[in-house]
Image 1 (cartoon, rainbow, N blue to C red):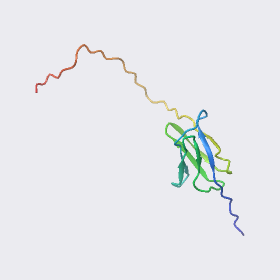
Image 2: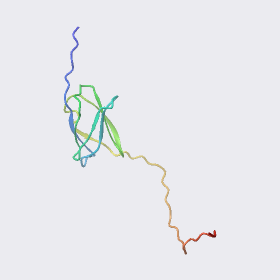
Image 3: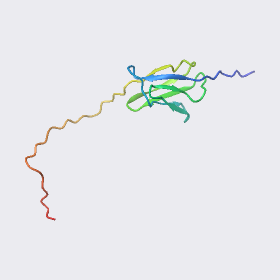
Image 4: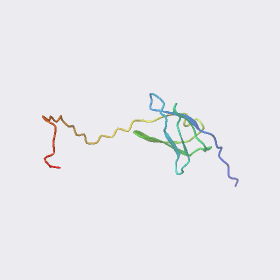
Length: 108
């Protein structure tokens, strides 16, 4: 049997939050440390040729990470990351009124 080589191709694209491009998004090939970062306009070009079935992981602080399975060179042409809203405990503090400047009662 002859093993058929898969076609490798360069993947380019743009990452946004559905409103505007996001600069500085980390893009890694899953299972490796090979990756790139989006430029000021949210554009990227992956530094290595990819094959069908490769998985790219897009991550940015405050936004949900997204995994994308590559099907062809257009697979990552337009990626949208969503805001990661996780509700934690919220404590609301009131105003503290002070009538005079605090002075230590210790003597020097």
